[in-house]
Image 1 (cartoon, helix red, strand yellow):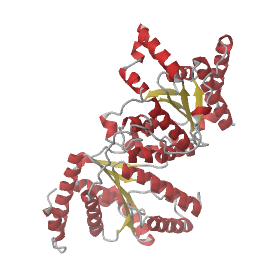
Image 2 (tube, helix red, strand yellow):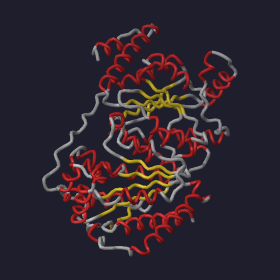
Image 3 (cartoon, one colour):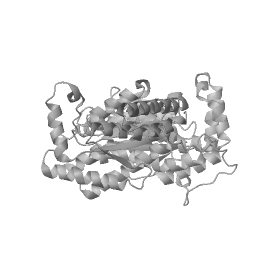
Image 4 (tube, rainbow, N blue to C red):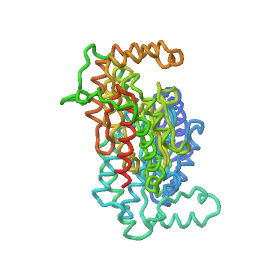
Length: 495
């Protein structure tokens, strides 16, 4: 970016409104171009405020001043029944712009928390918990290269109501840009609670890396200029240097303490072949009935399968898939991220695949790749995979709070059984596609993977999203263990 832009903007005569706007527009376009060229981060601008403060006008002004080719306007109707069939955070993850782009958001995640407080759907403590959860979310976005700018357009309640009524009565001009978000907050006590909640929200962010910017919306011209300057400052802010991935240590070490979870698993467990088919059929029938029941319509099921190479994840998933209505269940295989996925935060590609309530998604490999393969192979910097445990727990907590049942399976086999299966695959023509050079190479890293698995289990085993360790030396036993565990979990959750 040309460093003269800042000097030019600062020396413009404030008594010459046209020159001031032209200087700001030029500086914004230069900074926007730099953002698009670098592709190092995303900029999200949250435009919030009372009805009548000019949110629609501000959006239009920013679209006028910026190059629209790299701007996404993301406006949400938070009462949309179809959108609300998924967790609240899904809509924002689904639409999150890639690095190098700007997103302008109306109807942000703060609106949900503020609305709940204004309507007394939550108390002060609940509102404070919502703000802490939002802070976790925004901290994760920041570390993943997403800069969040939060703007509150401040306007006295009487004036905002007066302006809203005036704009609503117009058939042209500013009336076209009217944004109404607080229709339900119409009683005086509700409006007062909203004002109080906004004050709490702004105050709570004062010492955070992403504080609220409160802009006086009394004068539309000065309001728009202040918004533009705020966006420009965010565009010009230096991009923190992302830590580089380091070569994993030759001798891996756990970052947690305590006994080994896998050492307690009895890998010799088997099931008699003669009773297997009947038991499998019974388990599949249970799962089908549970997922077709009325109670499941309001929920949803998300299964994550991880395990040693050749542990039988695919065969267990096929038996589970065979128990479900094919119209309401999907299997998603996770491999190395694409270029598009790398241009977004790590969890983006998983959030986008969250199903509607009443449906099932089965992940063959999952979001745990960051703390497994990316950690062991050195694809992720230590700072990135170490913070991923908390981010994953936050992700799964949002899913369970949104009504989803999250069940995670680790399928384990011993090295001898793995070698036997590798050799069988290599020597069987129709199974050769299942074995690769990477599989053989990973065998040499079994100690490192074992350490990573133990840390994963210790740091992400939660009551609401538990791990089930499956002894998979006997494939039939493993398949039944998966199906029966899942059926038991659904019965418990669905009552």
